[in-house]
Image (cartoon, rainbow, N blue to C red):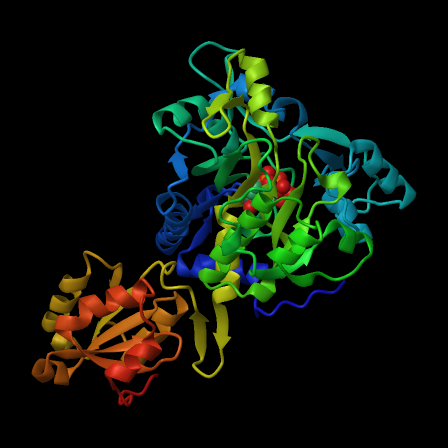
Amino acid sequence: MTHTHQTSITTEQLAIFCKQKGFVFQSSELYGGLSGIFDYGPLGVNFKNNIKQQWWNTFVNNRPDIVGIDGAIVSHAKIWKASGHVDNFEDILLECKKCKQRFRGDHLVEDVLKITADGLKKDAINKLVQENSIKCPNCKGELADAKQFNLMFATNVGPVEGNTAYLRPETAQLIFTNFKLVVETARLKLPFGIAQQGKAFRNEISPRDFIFRCREFEQMEMEYFIHPLKANDCSFIADVMDYSLKVYSEEMQHKKNKEKEMTIKDTLKQNIIKTQWHGYWLAQFHQWFVGLGVNPEHLRIRQHVKDEKSHYALDTWDLEYHFPMGWKELQGFANRTDFDLHQHMKHSGKDLSIFDEETKQKVIPHVVAEPALGVERAMLVFLFDAYHDDKKRGNILLKLHPKLAPIKVGVFPLVNKLEEQTKEVYQLLKDDFVCQYDRSGSVGRRYARADEIGIPYCITFDFDSLEDKSVTVRDRDTTSQIRVKIDELYSILSRLVSCKVTFKELEKHYKKVVVKVNEK
Ligand code: ATP
């Protein structure tokens, strides 16, 4: 299948853009860099925090049925023994006998044969390499037999050697190990969710595609627990029944069909999505991305096929995005049943069952869906969708959703003589909006710079402002401008940035400004 992506930029170009603007830097660059590890610059840190804040607001603060935790990164080895990571969290490694370069087996096979190889075991990879005479893509040397490679980062706790602990490879397990304490302290009743955001570490064999695959990254995960027999009893299902999205089921993949636009109602009726709760959560997160500006054409949900599904998962779907390198996983949704709680009961010897008041039964709840999203992948998606090379303006236009934009308001004096009064406006706003005060170059240049880093609204204080106590507010996406009283500025910006009103609506009530200053 060929993929044409609507955005005008490759992953490499986006990486350059992110470095130039101060979003993302290669970590340790001063000393040659560390592959798969990144630092976030002045814009990147705000952008990342805004994404995390939006996620937390939507899925924790705004929901009575979900609470959050913040677990530790360094964690007891037994957690990862119980979860299966110590024994099974492995990728297949292929090493070139000649140049010693190492490759992730399934990715190399996928790249060469253009097939899906996710989840293939060592023997299957070896067979494909031999049958197709796959050689080292670097030097054409012969590849050694495939080996298993564990992705966990180990560390030693305290001064005693051998006290091994692990940097968590996912945030999820900390939710299970704190399960009983959270249920008791937050007095949770089924169904409920426990969410967490934070760093995770995976010693990926070959990190690639900029921040798509890192060795240090952040996750936003949630475990949603239900009564084991109530997977089809979702009290919120009516909210999403008519929601429609692109669906790529296991059957469609086998038949080599294309994905199909379907409503959640139809996916459930046709037993494509197997449970109401799974359908509900897929729709909710899809909607979260669309609500924050992602074009739904670039999103689809794809069901895992038999070989790639984890042994414990009943059914798994990925929310995928149409990256320049093809459709790739953005977020996973595994139905993990009671696998994790069972494992931790077995390994800790503690009872993790809870009392369900409705059925008056003691149950080990099922995780009906574990929406697991990487912050870096979300950043990429928002950036790819926002990036426009605007030929008419002659500059990049980064159409980030106002809630995600790292800087919300640009504040400019028309000429430097007006600085004192402009700074008063800046003072009025700066406590509640991340503002950028900019006095250098022509106003046109300042607008262009603001467009390039996604500032949604810019305010210019001009000579008329001295008389009419008003300023112009410029909308990034349309370049249209309105005249607003300084007294009203705070309330108008609040409504704009929180999307309670659109600029178009404001244009009906405020005087439109015919742009006098040459934009360049
Ligand atoms: P992949 O198949 O791409 O390696 P995965 O299936 O192992 O991903 P999960 O274990 O389901 O990923 O992790 C949940 C989410 O965490 C992923 O959907 C992704 O957004 C993010 N994630 C996983 N690994 C990485 C990584 N190395 N770098 C950045 N984000 C990651």
